[in-house]
Amino acid sequence: MTGKVKVSIVVGSGSDTELSERAAQILEDFGVPYEVKVLSAHRQPGELEAYIKTCEAEVFIAIAGLAAHLPGFIASRTLKPVIGVPREVKLGGLDSLLSIVQMPRGVPVATVGIDNAENAALLAIRILALKDEELAAKLVERH
Image 1 (cartoon, rainbow, N blue to C red):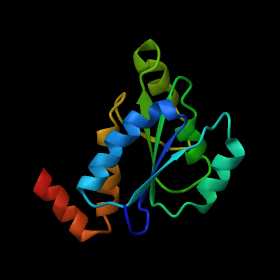
Image 2 (spheres, one colour; image 1 turned 180 degrees about the vertical axis):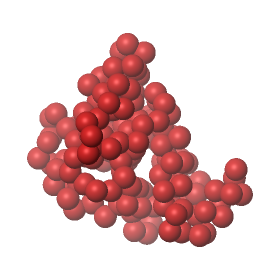
Image 3 (cartoon, rainbow, N blue to C red; image 1 turned 135 degrees about the vertical axis):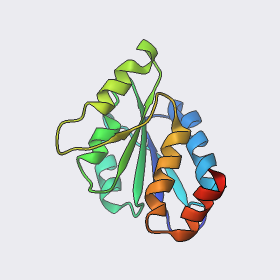
């Protein structure tokens, strides 16, 4: 998408791209500029931290499976809203869900349902719509 990036979709590995594409489609439908980054909290912590510090996006969507540290890693390094999408890899996705939803006090991460990247995108749009009347109107029209 063209324009200033409003939403950053971060995935921990290439295997998460199907979910990132589902979120991206919703953002495209609403005309919200976004970017997708593949950066692992475990394998690339330095690169991820540098990206978080320089990212202009207003909202992060972090898609992660298994231990699912990605959303919390991002939330611990920014004041911007972070939406975690737990990915079903093992245990029906409950491991990922619990890792994301049970963040310690002071490190908030909004969490959507397992594999529900579409809701993450819609939540990001609702957050952006608080300051964007045109986007709010699109939400009302779709609802």
